Image (cartoon, rainbow, N blue to C red; front, top):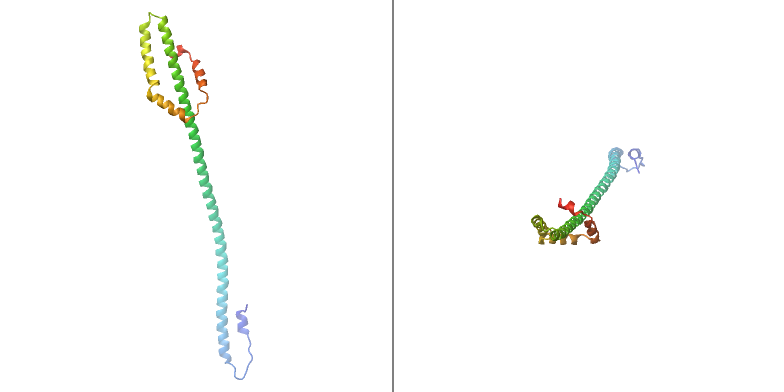
Length: 183
């Protein structure tokens, strides 16, 4: 690449009908100044472009890091939501199963109370009045626990969970002491 100094120092052959030496020198001096200005501007622009390109690369890396962080945060939030849903479903399922078990125990207690009352009535003729009062209470409880609403609730709960061993709740219920239930 030619420099401004080379333009200024360029020598031309002299001829009889040549150009005016002063005009040529003035033109070459002006050309050299303009060329040096352009060369300097070009160098400054190249430095600016390099600096801006390095800043652009830096900002692109920052943008990429931020995008990755955002993606990670979104994924973590989705994972947390999914875990919370699974945990909530497990808790709800466990609660429904426990409700079914408790209602089954209460129904077994009521069955035993009815059996106990029937046996006691046949054995104890003198205490019929007390038994009739007790029977009324048991019937009220029976009406509640064997009501259409409770049966529908039990059916709904039984449909939402798997009751794998209904005999286990019957066995657990047989261990309840009838005298404790009366108190």
